[in-house]
Length: 441
Image 1: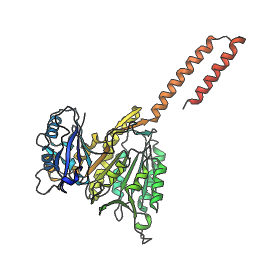
Image 2 (image 1 turned 135 degrees about the vertical axis):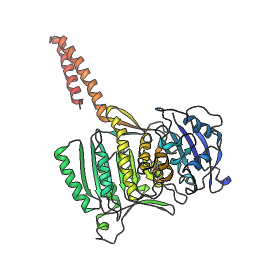
Image 3 (image 1 turned 180 degrees about the horizontal axis):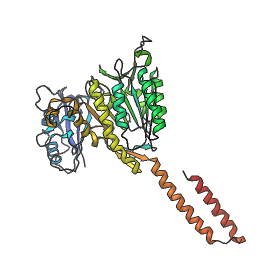
Image 4 (image 1 turned 90 degrees about the horizontal axis):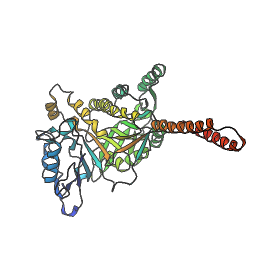
């Protein structure tokens, strides 16, 4: 049961530059005049004068009676119920508001409580009749590009390793980096893993020297998750990732670092990909009249994308990396026991945001008020939850059915005597059994 508020910019001719329209698209219960269009104020929130970051956004939302009623309903629920709150953005005017920080009188910051996950949705037209299905082959495959120009990625690697080492399902971690020290250290750790653990594989290599080669290299890994630790750039209507190479790091060349835009990153979309994480500045920030980098990636078909709506310091980027993967890996651990799994990344994000706040010694509510970095991570998803098929369980179920068929045929064979008229039938049954055995995985 979820609540979806749509913010869009139709009727542009009747709106001012800092305005959009909004309405309640979906709610757990029927609410009168939910689809009534009201004017929404998209002007920037002054965080310096906002005593509780996100309260101003809440005040703007409750000007719509139906949205107000929906928020009142969901904030009355008790543990362990969950009522996700989604903002479906269809205009760049409203993208840079701190939606994740929504703060209401009854429940304080919604996103810091497991009952009220907050995520942003991308509208791509009416829902397709055929659901987007992605696949899991028994091993969680993560490709990480650790290549922030002039920034040491060692702490990011340690944060990523520490998070994934706790995984309850088999993992393969492929690292691409621009730093020689990381190549050496990760290679050493990979050798140790090969001799000590079959549950967690690691490989490391240099970032390729061309954008097209980098995309191809990532594609070859068939990853479920792609993680970028690099610089992000958003300005003049253009958003991109800036990625260091060995040549730019060691100043072998005067060529600039690699630059990847949304149309290039969208090539990573494959039936194995579930999530693209951009641990880079301003990757969730709109620029000019253009939506953000992660918005465009999800619009282009990638199931989910995580990014930062503003600049993020290296220390906080490392906090994000460690806690984000620890929380979502707990969610992923359920995949191994199911054949069809509905991936809902937003359900775990409250733990990530609380980890940011708890870096302060203050109580959570005070840390949330004073420390704004917990609002930086932004998740974009599709309205239709992603379905993941566990191919290992499908194969197990298929094998069970095949073995049952073989057993039935073998029982029939035992009852048949090899007399001449029945010999043809016996040979036919034996052939069926052999064909079924060939289908076993």
